[in-house]
Amino acid sequence: MITRKEAEKAVFTLLNYLENNPTREGLEKTPKRVIDSFDEIFAGYTQESSEVLASTFNGEGYDGIVLLRDIEFHSTCEHHLQPFKGRAHVAYIPTDRIVGISKLARIVDLHARRLQNQERITKSVADDIETHLNPLGAAVIIEAAHGCMQCRGVMKQNSIMTTSAMRGVFFDKSEARTELMQLIRSRDL
Image (cartoon, rainbow, N blue to C red; front, side, top):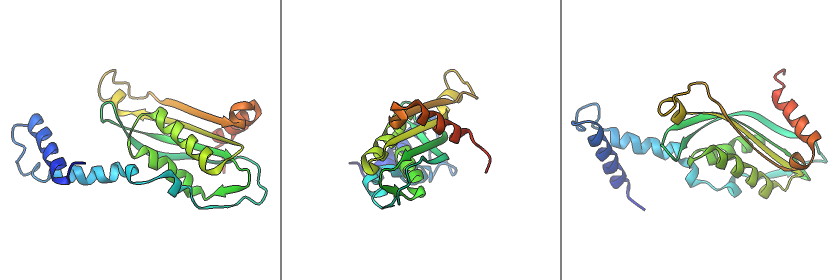
């Protein structure tokens, strides 16, 4: 593991690569600020899903879909270190235990706040829901816009990538998938 001082020096080296005067006033404290921001942006490395999903409650016989939709998130593409952001829809059908709704948002953040690809976030969130809640089914759908597509390469500003992971009854039964998709599309409160 490298030290914070070594990390700041690495940022200084990158600044020196980009600009011939990395010590000018505007850049003087940039290495420290970058590492401070990395500590926040990549906080997912300091958490475990078992901690996030540890606290559950008696489901009191509830056997319908539990869905938290439109969970906004941001992440960083591991291929180009470019940001991507979007929204996640996380659902499960409990057997006997339920989890507080904030935990569904937190598990998305845990995985998004790492160097990532969208497919891995989708799969990892579904794996965690399945492992820690043992539901009849788990489903994760993520829609995101990727900086690596917007500001470099093909430069497509309005492209949205969608990924999904369907487990249990959401995979086995088309009726469950259909109900889930209707709930996600429903915008009236």
